[in-house]
Image 1 (cartoon, rainbow, N blue to C red):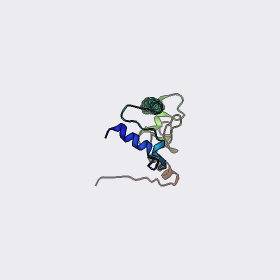
Image 2 (cartoon, one colour; image 1 turned 180 degrees about the horizontal axis):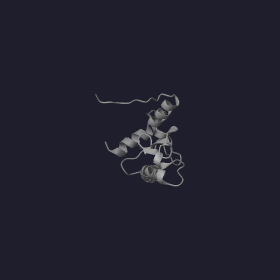
Image 3 (cartoon, rainbow, N blue to C red; image 1 turned 180 degrees about the vertical axis):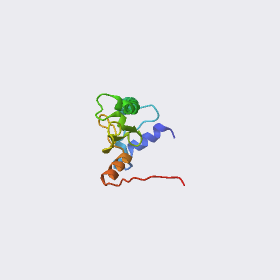
Image 4 (cartoon, rainbow, N blue to C red; image 1 turned 45 degrees about the horizontal axis):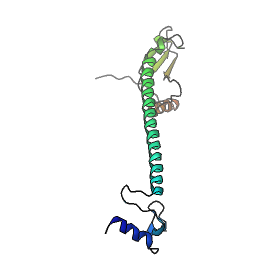
Length: 163
Protein backbone atom coordinates (compact mmCIF):
# COMPACT_ATOMS: atom_id res chain seq x y z
CA UNK A 1 0.00 0.00 0.00
CA UNK A 2 1.35 3.40 -0.96
CA UNK A 3 1.66 6.36 1.43
CA UNK A 4 -0.98 8.29 -0.52
CA UNK A 5 -3.47 5.41 -0.04
CA UNK A 6 -2.83 5.29 3.69
CA UNK A 7 -3.29 9.05 3.98
CA UNK A 8 -6.52 8.80 1.96
CA UNK A 9 -7.92 6.14 4.32
CA UNK A 10 -6.98 8.14 7.44
CA UNK A 11 -8.65 11.26 6.06
CA UNK A 12 -11.85 9.55 4.91
CA UNK A 13 -12.69 7.43 8.00
CA UNK A 14 -14.54 9.71 10.44
CA UNK A 15 -14.34 7.11 13.24
CA UNK A 16 -10.52 7.26 13.56
CA UNK A 17 -9.08 9.50 16.26
CA UNK A 18 -5.55 10.50 17.16
CA UNK A 19 -3.96 11.88 20.29
CA UNK A 20 -1.99 15.11 20.35
CA UNK A 21 1.55 14.43 21.66
CA UNK A 22 1.73 17.93 23.16
CA UNK A 23 -1.55 18.31 25.04
CA UNK A 24 -2.84 14.73 25.12
CA UNK A 25 -6.20 15.77 23.63
CA UNK A 26 -7.91 13.65 21.01
CA UNK A 27 -8.90 14.78 17.53
CA UNK A 28 -10.60 13.32 14.47
CA UNK A 29 -7.94 12.18 11.98
CA UNK A 30 -10.22 13.13 9.08
CA UNK A 31 -9.72 16.79 10.08
CA UNK A 32 -5.91 16.51 10.26
CA UNK A 33 -3.46 17.70 7.61
CA UNK A 34 -1.48 14.65 6.44
CA UNK A 35 1.63 14.62 4.31
CA UNK A 36 4.48 12.26 3.60
CA UNK A 37 8.20 13.15 3.58
CA UNK A 38 8.76 16.62 2.16
CA UNK A 39 5.55 16.68 0.13
CA UNK A 40 3.79 19.22 2.36
CA UNK A 41 0.31 20.55 1.89
CA UNK A 42 0.29 24.36 1.57
CA UNK A 43 -0.96 24.73 5.14
CA UNK A 44 1.64 22.27 6.48
CA UNK A 45 4.38 24.06 4.52
CA UNK A 46 3.30 27.33 6.12
CA UNK A 47 3.45 25.76 9.61
CA UNK A 48 6.87 24.18 8.98
CA UNK A 49 8.24 27.51 7.70
CA UNK A 50 6.81 29.26 10.77
CA UNK A 51 8.35 26.67 13.07
CA UNK A 52 11.74 26.87 11.32
CA UNK A 53 11.68 30.67 11.55
CA UNK A 54 11.06 30.44 15.30
CA UNK A 55 13.80 27.84 15.64
CA UNK A 56 16.27 30.05 13.77
CA UNK A 57 15.33 33.02 15.96
CA UNK A 58 15.81 31.00 19.17
CA UNK A 59 19.14 29.63 17.87
CA UNK A 60 20.36 33.17 17.20
CA UNK A 61 19.22 34.30 20.68
CA UNK A 62 21.02 31.33 22.27
CA UNK A 63 24.25 32.16 20.41
CA UNK A 64 23.98 35.77 21.58
CA UNK A 65 23.39 34.68 25.19
CA UNK A 66 26.42 32.36 25.04
CA UNK A 67 28.55 35.20 23.67
CA UNK A 68 27.42 37.55 26.43
CA UNK A 69 28.01 34.87 29.07
CA UNK A 70 31.59 34.41 27.83
CA UNK A 71 32.12 38.17 27.90
CA UNK A 72 30.78 38.39 31.47
CA UNK A 73 33.02 35.50 32.54
CA UNK A 74 36.05 37.16 30.97
CA UNK A 75 35.27 40.47 32.70
CA UNK A 76 34.72 38.70 36.03
CA UNK A 77 38.04 36.85 35.74
CA UNK A 78 39.86 40.06 34.87
CA UNK A 79 38.19 41.85 37.76
CA UNK A 80 39.23 39.14 40.23
CA UNK A 81 42.81 39.10 38.97
CA UNK A 82 43.12 42.90 39.05
CA UNK A 83 41.63 42.84 42.55
CA UNK A 84 44.28 40.38 43.73
CA UNK A 85 47.04 42.67 42.43
CA UNK A 86 45.46 45.80 43.88
CA UNK A 87 44.96 44.28 47.33
CA UNK A 88 48.72 43.73 47.56
CA UNK A 89 49.59 47.35 46.79
CA UNK A 90 46.75 49.19 48.59
CA UNK A 91 48.72 49.76 51.83
CA UNK A 92 51.30 51.71 49.80
CA UNK A 93 48.66 54.06 48.34
CA UNK A 94 48.03 57.49 49.91
CA UNK A 95 44.29 56.73 50.28
CA UNK A 96 44.99 53.84 52.71
CA UNK A 97 44.07 55.22 56.13
CA UNK A 98 46.32 52.96 58.20
CA UNK A 99 50.09 52.99 58.56
CA UNK A 100 51.30 50.51 55.95
CA UNK A 101 54.20 49.52 58.22
CA UNK A 102 51.63 48.28 60.74
CA UNK A 103 50.05 45.90 58.18
CA UNK A 104 50.96 42.33 57.49
CA UNK A 105 49.48 40.65 54.45
CA UNK A 106 47.86 37.23 54.47
CA UNK A 107 45.78 37.73 51.28
CA UNK A 108 43.85 34.50 51.83
CA UNK A 109 41.39 34.10 53.43
CA UNK A 110 41.67 37.72 54.60
CA UNK A 111 43.94 40.40 53.20
CA UNK A 112 45.67 42.08 56.15
CA UNK A 113 46.19 42.11 59.87
CA UNK A 114 46.77 45.65 61.07
CA UNK A 115 48.74 46.05 64.31
CA UNK A 116 47.93 49.65 65.27
CA UNK A 117 51.04 51.28 66.74
CA UNK A 118 53.51 48.58 65.72
CA UNK A 119 55.82 50.87 63.73
CA UNK A 120 55.63 54.27 65.44
CA UNK A 121 54.62 53.66 69.04
CA UNK A 122 56.21 51.63 71.74
CA UNK A 123 53.14 49.41 71.97
CA UNK A 124 50.41 47.90 69.85
CA UNK A 125 47.09 49.50 70.85
CA UNK A 126 44.70 47.56 68.66
CA UNK A 127 44.63 44.67 66.21
CA UNK A 128 42.36 44.92 63.19
CA UNK A 129 41.50 42.36 60.52
CA UNK A 130 41.15 44.03 57.09
CA UNK A 131 39.73 42.57 53.92
CA UNK A 132 39.61 44.77 50.84
CA UNK A 133 36.57 44.72 48.57
CA UNK A 134 35.62 46.73 45.50
CA UNK A 135 32.28 47.38 43.86
CA UNK A 136 29.56 45.06 45.10
CA UNK A 137 31.94 42.32 46.26
CA UNK A 138 30.86 40.48 49.40
CA UNK A 139 32.66 38.38 51.98
CA UNK A 140 32.88 34.78 50.90
CA UNK A 141 31.61 32.08 53.32
CA UNK A 142 35.04 31.49 54.90
CA UNK A 143 35.57 35.21 55.43
CA UNK A 144 32.11 35.49 56.99
CA UNK A 145 32.99 32.65 59.39
CA UNK A 146 36.21 34.44 60.41
CA UNK A 147 34.29 37.71 60.93
CA UNK A 148 31.66 35.90 63.04
CA UNK A 149 34.32 34.15 65.16
CA UNK A 150 36.02 37.49 65.88
CA UNK A 151 32.70 39.16 66.72
CA UNK A 152 31.87 36.27 69.12
CA UNK A 153 35.33 36.85 70.67
CA UNK A 154 36.44 33.34 69.71
CA UNK A 155 40.06 34.51 69.41
CA UNK A 156 42.97 33.55 71.61
CA UNK A 157 46.73 33.94 71.89
CA UNK A 158 49.04 30.98 71.93
CA UNK A 159 52.80 30.57 72.05
CA UNK A 160 53.98 27.40 70.37
CA UNK A 161 57.31 25.92 71.37
CA UNK A 162 58.87 22.86 69.94
CA UNK A 163 60.18 20.65 72.71
